[in-house]
Image (tube, rainbow, N blue to C red; front, side):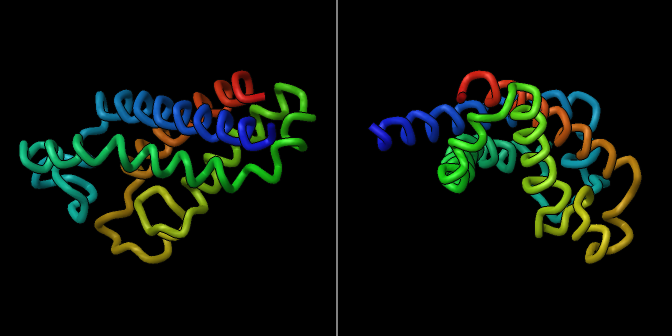
Length: 155
């Protein structure tokens, strides 16, 4: 019984993560493509989305990557399911959204223009207010979508 509950949680978590991440990314790209595309893009160390071959490769790798991320993040939470289930919906949403925003973004160990590590380790040309805010906007949208959905559907 527990194995089935865990499998359902992992599957649901993975689907919610993938959908929330996709939606947040699509929203961000509507107004912040300057970060990921073109010769003057803010993060020239990532693939250029304006080059068809690069965009195609990203498209092929995106779904498998998000599914793997979702499964891994869900597995880590399995020991906490009972405690999370005991929370009210509002506290659960705050916990899940905060967890995603802080651990998956702001405080992650990856140096990127929107992380604390990025502010420490990246060259100045990669750290700017507009890039930081644009990427943080995506992270906030993702975290809220994820927290609201996972808090409702998974518990």
